[in-house]
Amino acid sequence: MGGGKEAETRQIASSVLDADEGVKFTLTAIRSTAAPLRATVRLKVFVGQHGRLVLSDQVRVGAVDSWFWFPVTGRGPSASSRRRAPTPHPSR
Image (cartoon, rainbow, N blue to C red; front, side):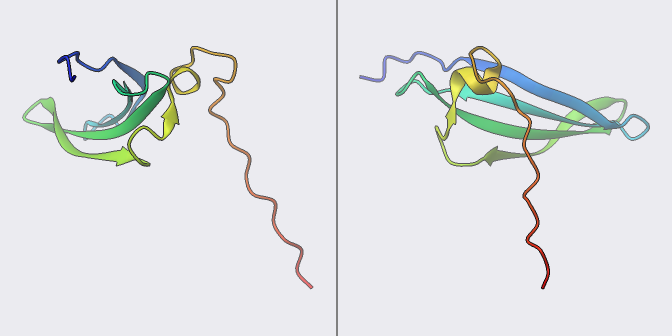
């Protein structure tokens, strides 16, 4: 059944953390081939070596297919990535 179709990917964030050292991260959504409304998100870190950025580390963010494709890629009605800080409990 695995017709060999390659999963659709979309970069959802990218930032240079240290321009002098060349530290960059990217977040990429990988659309599920089994459940097209679901996605996996991967964080990659790149560091500067010999004048170019090379992959230093990568990790999956959450479980496989634990994200919804349209909200995480910004293509849908609930594309907000803002989170509210937890409400602190009052001290007694």
